[in-house]
Amino acid sequence: MSAEAWQITWFTIGVATLSTAAILPPGVALGWLLARRDWPGKSLIETLVALPLVIPPVATGLILLKLFGRRGPLGGWLERTFGWEIVFTWKAVVVATAVMSFPLLVRTARVAFEGVNPRLEQVARTLGAGPWRVFATITLPLAARGLVAGAVLAFARALGEFGATVMVAGFIPGQTVTLSLAIYQFVQLGHDGEAMVLLAISVAIAFAAVWVSEYFVRRRPA
Amino acid sequence: MKLRHISLFLFALAALAARAAELNVFAAASLTDALKEIAKAYEPASGDKLRFNFGASSTLAIQIKQGAPADVFFSADEAKMNDLAKAGLILADTRRTLLANTLVIVVNADGGAAIATPADLVKPGIGRIALAQPQTVPVGIYGKQWLQKVGLWKQVIDRIVPTENVRASLAAVEAGNVDAGIVYKTDALISKKVKMVFEVPAAEGPSITYPAAVVKDSKQVEAARKFAAYLAGPEARAVFAKYGFLPAP
Image 1: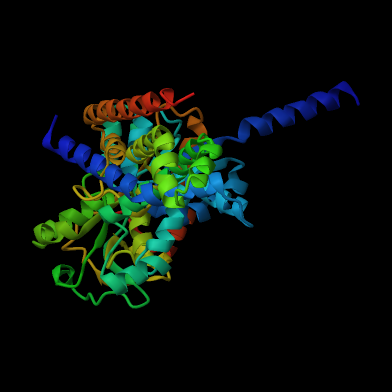
Image 2: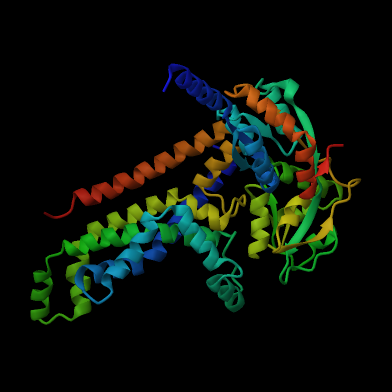
């Protein structure tokens, strides 16, 4: 494997890890809220969260490009306030993969929390535990397997992201080129051999990630 | 209806159907607007329909090599056409060099970077320059050739944002996501959101020529030949000139 292939692989894994870590707290929180609480406008939130899963990835990428572009509402503000440039940098790759894998995490987390018998939580409350303690000692451990499965699924999705990433990050060698982008580019260049190498790496990583996720799902308590 | 009338009707229908060819024209992205206008005149006059596939000539050439159903290929550089010729994929007697073009530096029309000379591309404060993929896309190759010739390539290379084709570079400048872009003069002319700040003089720049040819595996060779000949004719030439293309040298 060439140095370039290694760099692309590590970059992709790094970005996917960062993006999954970033969406974990809000994703788990939202999953819990959707599982345990009801409020006016809940279906609106459910739909908004599901959007990146359903609309074409390039459409999501276009929305992100308009938002985070240098003259966009978020991008312009970030540049003026922190001096951060988002589009055409690795930050755009993280944003794109985070947005695309968020719905997957929320869905899996919601199902995981819905699988925890609420009576167990109520019993803990009657025994004097505060809500945070209940969450930490009852809900979270019982939902843990499903949450880990969701995180791994989100990670796998982040690894394979293309459409949204291509829109906001472009193909800057060494800075924004992930495995998916590199495969596309190698084919454009006519370097099918190198594309196949990266294809094999992508398949291997995705295979491992999904297998781990399925392992956790299979071992859920009955 | 008499049998004579029916058969006449069917014959006319068949003749019409035989004449109404649908041509797949694979053309460089920079030709988008000019070719669409040419189609508006050509379709009613010839009875044929034109279906365009615009993109980077490098991408189009790869698609043709992999068997995409193209009838006519209109490339932004000779190299891609040579590639296909070597692979025996075009009808050599239909190949003609039709147009020429020049490179320009563009910035956003509304508060764009202060660039007046090529050397300004490397001054501090200029962060990103959009240029189509310099290894494969014609305008990227031309841009790199020119920048190497004026000795700026090594300094500028870190600022280059490689895009998929020339129109993607244009779009990046229009959106303000890059400080400058290197595109064809014809692309700068169609966009109100960018302004041309420098035109590469003919003597300094690479020779930019656009050849067109009929693809050998075309299923409509006669109609394709007719269209390729039309592209070399006076009506098409007038439209190309209107969009800023130069005649072939």
